[in-house]
Image (cartoon, rainbow, N blue to C red):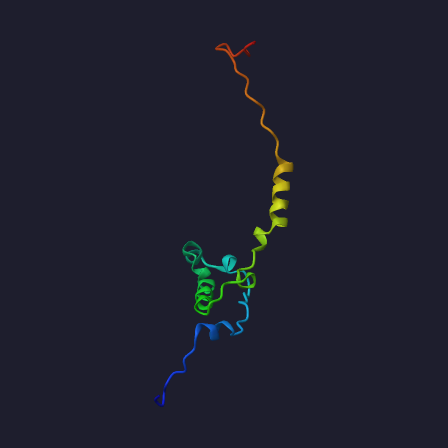
Length: 106
């Protein structure tokens, strides 16, 4: 037992530690630059959080996950779908014609 001996902690001691949930300022996916978007480095804080919690015998909770972007929420997607569906106009079917340009009879 020396002057600088480290106190032994067990995994059970770490499990009892209260860890507040992760807080996101805004959605990192929508504020990420092109390189970060292509390489998914905007997810790094959540991966680090998962590693930190795993070392303490805990796992990510719903509160730790990235909030859903406004453009991915069901209300927004529903509005886009409705607008596209309502503006859809079916194309006229092409009629088969003979060599003279007249419509074939069946």
